[in-house]
Image (cartoon, rainbow, N blue to C red; front, side, top):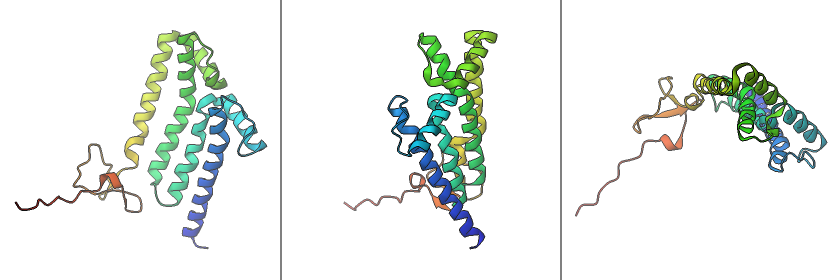
Length: 196
Protein backbone atom coordinates (compact mmCIF):
# COMPACT_ATOMS: atom_id res chain seq x y z
CA UNK A 1 0.00 0.00 0.00
CA UNK A 2 1.57 3.28 -1.13
CA UNK A 3 1.18 6.71 0.44
CA UNK A 4 -1.77 7.62 -1.76
CA UNK A 5 -3.72 4.55 -0.74
CA UNK A 6 -2.95 5.21 2.93
CA UNK A 7 -4.17 8.79 2.62
CA UNK A 8 -7.37 7.67 0.91
CA UNK A 9 -7.98 4.99 3.55
CA UNK A 10 -7.46 7.58 6.29
CA UNK A 11 -9.80 9.98 4.52
CA UNK A 12 -12.55 7.38 4.27
CA UNK A 13 -12.05 6.52 7.94
CA UNK A 14 -12.35 10.18 8.97
CA UNK A 15 -15.52 10.57 6.91
CA UNK A 16 -16.94 7.50 8.63
CA UNK A 17 -16.01 8.99 12.01
CA UNK A 18 -17.77 12.22 11.07
CA UNK A 19 -20.93 10.29 10.14
CA UNK A 20 -20.84 8.39 13.44
CA UNK A 21 -20.43 11.61 15.42
CA UNK A 22 -23.27 13.24 13.50
CA UNK A 23 -25.57 10.26 14.07
CA UNK A 24 -24.71 10.20 17.76
CA UNK A 25 -25.28 13.93 18.34
CA UNK A 26 -27.92 15.22 15.91
CA UNK A 27 -30.93 12.91 16.62
CA UNK A 28 -30.90 13.57 20.40
CA UNK A 29 -30.77 17.31 19.73
CA UNK A 30 -33.78 17.04 17.43
CA UNK A 31 -35.62 15.06 20.12
CA UNK A 32 -35.08 17.80 22.68
CA UNK A 33 -32.01 16.37 24.40
CA UNK A 34 -33.16 12.77 24.90
CA UNK A 35 -29.95 10.73 24.56
CA UNK A 36 -31.51 7.25 24.31
CA UNK A 37 -32.30 5.45 22.13
CA UNK A 38 -29.29 6.52 20.10
CA UNK A 39 -28.55 5.35 16.51
CA UNK A 40 -24.96 4.59 17.58
CA UNK A 41 -26.04 2.66 20.67
CA UNK A 42 -24.94 3.18 24.29
CA UNK A 43 -21.59 4.57 23.19
CA UNK A 44 -23.35 7.25 21.14
CA UNK A 45 -25.64 8.09 24.06
CA UNK A 46 -22.67 8.49 26.40
CA UNK A 47 -20.81 10.60 23.83
CA UNK A 48 -23.79 12.88 23.32
CA UNK A 49 -24.34 13.24 27.07
CA UNK A 50 -20.75 14.36 27.63
CA UNK A 51 -20.63 16.74 24.67
CA UNK A 52 -24.05 18.20 25.40
CA UNK A 53 -23.05 18.82 29.02
CA UNK A 54 -19.96 20.72 27.86
CA UNK A 55 -21.11 22.53 24.69
CA UNK A 56 -24.91 22.26 24.70
CA UNK A 57 -26.65 22.43 21.34
CA UNK A 58 -23.48 23.49 19.54
CA UNK A 59 -21.95 20.06 20.19
CA UNK A 60 -23.02 19.06 16.67
CA UNK A 61 -20.11 21.17 15.39
CA UNK A 62 -17.68 18.58 16.79
CA UNK A 63 -18.33 16.35 13.76
CA UNK A 64 -17.28 18.97 11.18
CA UNK A 65 -13.45 18.68 11.57
CA UNK A 66 -13.67 14.94 10.85
CA UNK A 67 -15.39 15.70 7.54
CA UNK A 68 -12.98 18.48 6.57
CA UNK A 69 -9.83 16.45 7.29
CA UNK A 70 -11.36 13.43 5.58
CA UNK A 71 -11.91 15.51 2.46
CA UNK A 72 -8.36 16.84 2.78
CA UNK A 73 -6.92 13.32 2.87
CA UNK A 74 -8.99 12.40 -0.20
CA UNK A 75 -7.59 15.39 -2.09
CA UNK A 76 -10.92 17.23 -2.37
CA UNK A 77 -10.03 20.04 0.04
CA UNK A 78 -6.72 21.81 0.49
CA UNK A 79 -4.80 21.55 3.76
CA UNK A 80 -5.10 25.31 4.25
CA UNK A 81 -8.88 25.09 3.96
CA UNK A 82 -9.02 22.21 6.46
CA UNK A 83 -6.93 24.19 8.94
CA UNK A 84 -9.15 27.24 8.54
CA UNK A 85 -12.29 25.21 9.09
CA UNK A 86 -10.76 23.66 12.21
CA UNK A 87 -9.83 27.07 13.61
CA UNK A 88 -13.31 28.39 12.86
CA UNK A 89 -15.02 25.43 14.54
CA UNK A 90 -12.77 25.74 17.61
CA UNK A 91 -13.68 29.40 18.02
CA UNK A 92 -17.37 28.67 17.45
CA UNK A 93 -17.36 25.90 20.07
CA UNK A 94 -15.81 28.25 22.60
CA UNK A 95 -18.07 31.28 22.13
CA UNK A 96 -21.32 30.20 20.44
CA UNK A 97 -22.55 28.57 23.68
CA UNK A 98 -21.91 31.89 25.43
CA UNK A 99 -23.96 33.71 22.80
CA UNK A 100 -26.71 31.13 23.33
CA UNK A 101 -26.65 31.79 27.09
CA UNK A 102 -26.70 35.57 26.56
CA UNK A 103 -29.76 35.27 24.32
CA UNK A 104 -31.57 33.16 26.90
CA UNK A 105 -30.60 35.59 29.65
CA UNK A 106 -31.84 38.57 27.64
CA UNK A 107 -35.18 36.84 27.01
CA UNK A 108 -35.49 35.84 30.65
CA UNK A 109 -35.44 32.13 29.87
CA UNK A 110 -33.29 29.26 31.03
CA UNK A 111 -30.60 28.67 28.39
CA UNK A 112 -30.20 24.95 28.99
CA UNK A 113 -28.83 24.48 25.49
CA UNK A 114 -25.78 26.58 26.27
CA UNK A 115 -24.03 23.81 28.16
CA UNK A 116 -21.63 24.16 31.05
CA UNK A 117 -19.07 26.14 29.04
CA UNK A 118 -21.57 28.67 27.72
CA UNK A 119 -23.14 29.18 31.14
CA UNK A 120 -19.82 29.57 32.95
CA UNK A 121 -18.27 31.91 30.38
CA UNK A 122 -21.48 33.92 29.93
CA UNK A 123 -21.91 34.46 33.67
CA UNK A 124 -18.25 35.44 33.97
CA UNK A 125 -18.46 38.00 31.15
CA UNK A 126 -21.72 39.50 32.43
CA UNK A 127 -20.35 39.69 35.98
CA UNK A 128 -17.20 41.52 34.86
CA UNK A 129 -18.33 43.61 31.85
CA UNK A 130 -22.12 43.72 32.15
CA UNK A 131 -24.61 42.46 29.58
CA UNK A 132 -23.73 45.05 26.93
CA UNK A 133 -20.00 44.48 27.34
CA UNK A 134 -20.48 40.71 27.21
CA UNK A 135 -22.46 41.01 23.96
CA UNK A 136 -19.78 43.22 22.43
CA UNK A 137 -16.97 40.84 23.42
CA UNK A 138 -18.69 37.65 22.27
CA UNK A 139 -19.99 39.21 19.05
CA UNK A 140 -16.59 40.71 18.19
CA UNK A 141 -14.80 37.43 18.82
CA UNK A 142 -17.26 35.45 16.70
CA UNK A 143 -17.04 37.95 13.84
CA UNK A 144 -13.25 37.99 14.05
CA UNK A 145 -13.19 34.19 14.10
CA UNK A 146 -15.35 33.99 10.97
CA UNK A 147 -13.39 36.75 9.26
CA UNK A 148 -9.91 35.48 10.09
CA UNK A 149 -10.69 31.86 9.32
CA UNK A 150 -11.66 32.75 5.74
CA UNK A 151 -14.16 29.88 5.63
CA UNK A 152 -16.21 31.49 2.89
CA UNK A 153 -13.23 31.81 0.57
CA UNK A 154 -11.02 28.89 1.59
CA UNK A 155 -12.75 26.40 -0.70
CA UNK A 156 -12.39 28.57 -3.79
CA UNK A 157 -9.15 28.58 -5.74
CA UNK A 158 -8.16 29.90 -9.10
CA UNK A 159 -5.74 28.11 -11.36
CA UNK A 160 -3.10 30.59 -10.27
CA UNK A 161 -3.48 29.37 -6.68
CA UNK A 162 -4.81 32.69 -5.36
CA UNK A 163 -8.07 32.80 -3.40
CA UNK A 164 -11.10 33.68 -5.47
CA UNK A 165 -12.72 36.67 -3.84
CA UNK A 166 -16.42 37.03 -4.59
CA UNK A 167 -17.93 38.04 -6.88
CA UNK A 168 -15.97 35.77 -9.20
CA UNK A 169 -16.26 36.38 -12.89
CA UNK A 170 -18.11 33.70 -14.76
CA UNK A 171 -15.45 33.56 -17.43
CA UNK A 172 -12.74 32.51 -14.99
CA UNK A 173 -12.09 28.93 -14.09
CA UNK A 174 -12.66 28.24 -10.41
CA UNK A 175 -11.18 25.06 -8.99
CA UNK A 176 -10.58 23.24 -5.76
CA UNK A 177 -7.75 20.89 -4.96
CA UNK A 178 -7.60 18.12 -7.48
CA UNK A 179 -8.69 20.51 -10.28
CA UNK A 180 -12.36 19.70 -9.63
CA UNK A 181 -14.58 22.48 -10.94
CA UNK A 182 -17.41 23.88 -8.91
CA UNK A 183 -20.52 23.41 -11.00
CA UNK A 184 -22.07 26.77 -10.13
CA UNK A 185 -18.92 28.61 -11.21
CA UNK A 186 -18.49 26.93 -14.59
CA UNK A 187 -18.54 29.40 -17.48
CA UNK A 188 -21.71 29.10 -19.47
CA UNK A 189 -21.51 28.60 -23.19
CA UNK A 190 -23.00 31.49 -25.18
CA UNK A 191 -26.47 30.84 -26.49
CA UNK A 192 -26.86 31.00 -30.24
CA UNK A 193 -29.77 32.89 -31.65
CA UNK A 194 -31.66 31.40 -34.50
CA UNK A 195 -31.63 33.48 -37.69
CA UNK A 196 -34.97 35.11 -38.50
